Image (cartoon, rainbow, N blue to C red; front, side):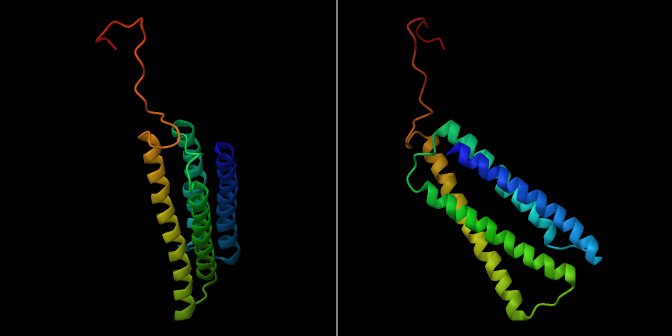
Length: 159
């Protein structure tokens, strides 16, 4: 599993770089100089994609998350939530850079899509953190935080 998560981190790093370059070049090409949601694509993919999955790989190495029941489903929901959120940011940013005015319905639909992505991210993040907590406390598949056993070479009371 850690290899899969490092691979996901690499993909999200590439998407983050592509998002940053697209933001810079697209806004320059259309002559837009204001704030746009396109600038958030880079940051979301870098932090919630790259850094999150690198951290998850390290946590798995420390606490043995890979064998946890339901982990794959929560990871899938996290991927879906992140990409849905970024898709909403991308579309919103394109309309802002073009100066397009969305109808109330289209604006609400776009906000709803981004909101669903954020909800999926939030719920899956809490579930994943709960799994990390259970694994860290030794109730997971690998009891990592056991007290070290005293060796015969150590005198009583000294550690």
